Image 1 (tube, helix red, strand yellow):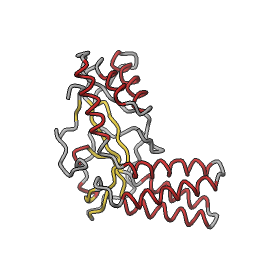
Image 2: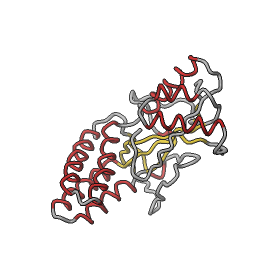
Image 3: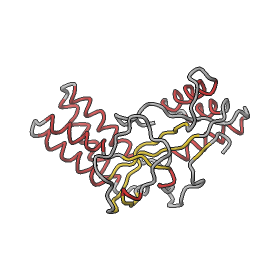
Image 4: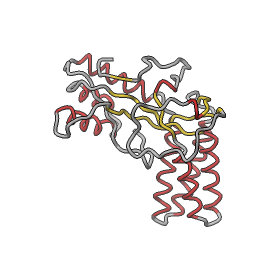
Length: 234
């Protein structure tokens, strides 16, 4: 799972209590299918952005310059990514429950269609769990596995609980993000580290969270269920 600076580390994946190998493999396929909706270049670019801001905070200008060069290149490649889709911000379908810490839009949503790039994804549990419950323990185990990039292992953890989850996508306006990163690069070249950091923060703040239904699969087909809810057996 790629992490944007303001995204929590909670990847909440849960499945059925069937305890069968079939359920585990099915859940693993579901995880792979969902994360296939993300743009690898988009995720890379926003990883670079987050790390560049950290480098700037640590006075590592040279490190930030390298990261921004990579981010610029990644966003340029992303322009030909078949995961990019056109939609006005006002037409986006918000998730039932947004990730903790998601920034609130600073202005009314635009009605002009723009290109959006899926850069991150996260599973949100739609019910309240007791921190010491078996289900919460299963969530923590799945979080650990997914954050280590091990969906198959996470799928094993999914079998122990039956909780509805929504897959929420983080999408970024492609052209605006590329412009922000390019602007930050130029500001940094002019030794304006504060201005560069502000430009990168604007790129991060432009991210919106949407229901998975908003984004088609890489082959252009619409996604399935409509409500985005998942269990390990599906």
